[in-house]
Length: 144
Image (cartoon, rainbow, N blue to C red; front, side):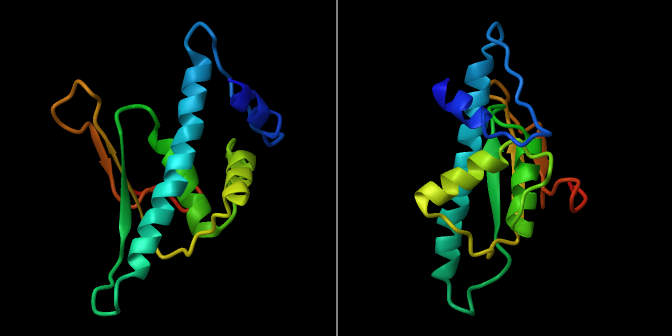
């Protein structure tokens, strides 16, 4: 909770993260922040693997991120826009937190990924309820 409050003080002026104690709001907010860290970590891991490929093995590489509901596609849309543009959308509530995290961890992106895909499958479902390829936010025009 303290981490969420600390990050909330650095929110952009035009963004608010509203949480409800009765609805486990802090826990949900913590999940959203951890999801962003996961996007960053997985992206860097895959970029490092792409760098190991020789020219004959290279092709477009997309990262598939799966959720059971802990994060939503719109979070990935924000991240995908940031990854492609190198700057945040004005309404991305996580922009200051992500910038701080990447600076603290010394993380930079090579930009070698062609894009991101999203798969949603709730824990109690046998099949995925959503699959989106080349996820992008309104900045680039979302595609499914």
